[in-house]
Image (tube, helix red, strand yellow):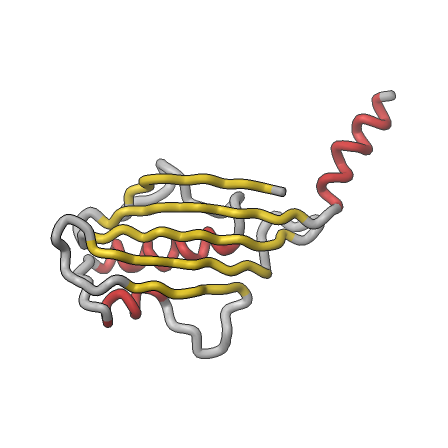
Length: 136
């Protein structure tokens, strides 16, 4: 009986899993909020995704400067793909370098899947506002 239970538990490790993540982070000094809605596939035996996509929106809050940015990002990264922080700066946001660097980091980590997504206590410059992580 114990063998059947162990085999059943291990079977989950050997099948592909889909994930869906909704994450909202705030850049308090740069007066912006980023909303990331990602979904992807984590291959059997892997901890992170190599195949995912995310709809990302960065918008000013609290009267901050900048024009909203709405982009699709994906793994694998297409050749010549731009960093979100570059697009945010081009849109007129005035965020400190630490927030821009962490902006790129949170998007990269959400694309990798729930085990890599930065949650409360794991960010420095950005604040976690909302987080929903779902495996299927």
